[in-house]
Image (cartoon, rainbow, N blue to C red; front, side, top):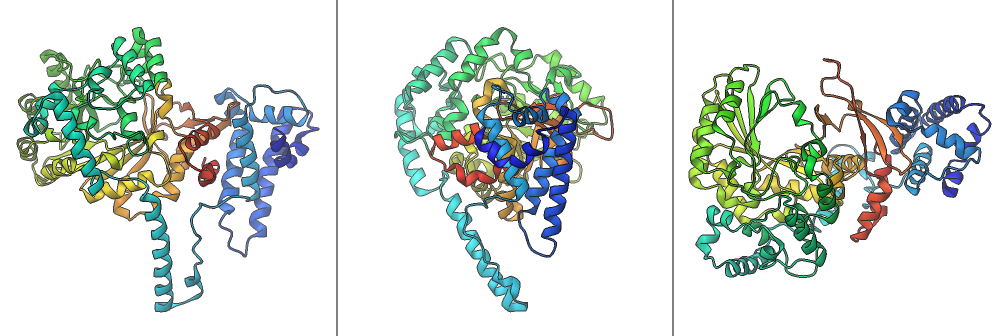
Length: 589
């Protein structure tokens, strides 16, 4: 608070003698506008690379000062500032709140620290012609060298060292399970040997005491849990948790998750159906949020369970025997699709549809392919990552035969989280699909465990090299039970603007989105799709996320509360990151 009083002296002086909070609001609004105007005028004839920060901070402050923002957020920033200015006690305001206001004040002054990379001198700007081009090329070489140095922190699974480690790990897994090399490469054998408890997993994966107890508690309470032997072989043996941290986080539930799931285990649908699929399901097994595409969920399980799964309220356990929808239910869902000519595309997901045997899978796919108005069938599956041997030559050929160039396309959308998940087995699986004309796309969920500087950039570079197109990067959902995985919106924006933009265009084709409950995707790159409402007392930001139908239909916006930036930066420091390296995060709104 004392630091903020020093940084925000101008703010507080302006509103200290305001008669009402409304007068304080108007004074601050005018000050922000006039101050921005003055700074732009002062720098009218010079190059100031931080004027956009002044602009964005002024815009953010003005937005928070609107009365409608305070009502929507349930908290008044101007009231808090007025109270501080007058010396009134506000014990509800936490360090995260003051940290936000300190950086807002600095941003309005243009006092911003640049990204910690060696600055390009841009000597080419003073040259012309070929001389300028040669100098510019040297500058770009310098920049890319720094990018590669940053990305080199994150090992992928294709390096010789990773292959050697994992050859030993596979041998240990096979030995523990009594399997041969041939067994290990058979997806059915993999499914038969899914680890469903800490005891089973610990036969070939070293666990910490916290991991072990969380799994035991989860399985005792019949929470979904399962790890394939193949995926377990990707974990590291040693005490270091840097390389495989993201992989373990995928499947080993943290204690907070287990506790929250237990708390609501008798009401899982209402407690955990964050996307409100119950409100967007016109018939069982079908979800529809957009005019020309719908989701079909014929199979309600997966070979491996992701802790932060959107549908953790639906899935009971890995590869449950009764996971296939009943014949009548499936018939009704496909009949609905057939009788809805507006639908042009179907996403077959679940669960993981490639958990089904070929005969069952292709029976469903052929029925969809017979619907005249469908011209694209999309298959959502994580098996290239968790069970790549499932992509058999027979499966790939079967999918390829469903294609009718110019009439119907088939593609696969998978979910690779981290470069360390990418292995020779995945490369071979993707290649089998690509040789049949099947495009493969990736959806990355931007969790805490994949959010370090240039970590996602490294993933994109490797994905494109093995034939997978980056498609979406999802901001983590605001689900209480998965709060350990959440990342502030500002970090994803920072990643897009400061890291992804340095990659070649074909490597950064993914769109950053936030899935709004009941409404669908909100595109984060475009500021006009959201409003910052307030900085809450704990330092979290409250946003209005606009519905995609904005301007087409009357839909109310969704109020979402973000992760406090100070909390996120503290977590980064706890795993060895330098928080100063992320300093510009405060200025992405």
